[in-house]
Length: 251
Image 1 (tube, rainbow, N blue to C red):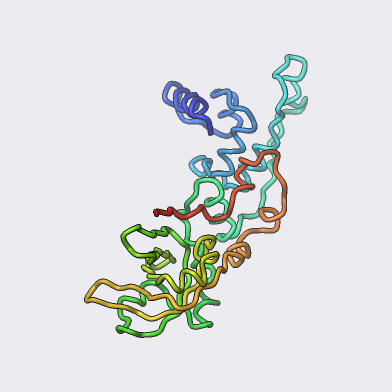
Image 2 (tube, helix red, strand yellow):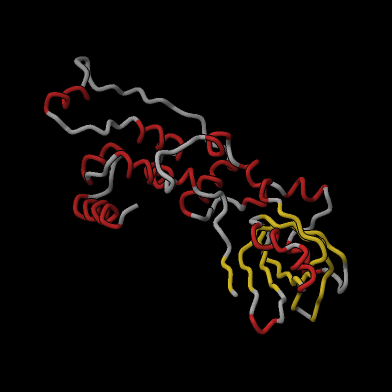
């Protein structure tokens, strides 16, 4: 959302009070339908009691045409203003989280890994919090989102990776030989699966990687078909961005 558009929105709200609905936002702040759709995509209208899906529906019903006197009267029917509003079903939580990541790059509703936990548990993958009670040299399997990759020049080719799931974070150590074998997986994965053993020194815990898998495809199961397949008018549109933001990499 352009900064000057946000400034207009805030200035009008501070000067004339809170917005009653989406139509009032457009009229008072002078926002275009495209900018209102951006706000709706980011779930910004929850404070007005309007869900993301309903807000998107309302935003797309706005006509992106000049406000000409000839058409101004079309908004009022002879027998009175139209009161009925299309009520859409609520979005599943997984879709809400996907939309949050696509628009604001994070979510306060849930963590993407939480929706995969049942399947992961059946396959023997532990959550990050389980590492607190893990024994030294214990073999473990874990999966998580890649937050940070680090390969310091002083580390002699060792790569350090920070993974995150819904319970916390885990630190991985990838030795040079393993890095050489799984370089593409290490550098491209957003959801990384690791098999290895625990290295522990009191409260400092690492997983020494032995086998790595890129399971970013599992994240796409969280996205509805529309988010996976539907096109958008601009490459920068929220529905065209990757589901999970890229990691922070340091070399």
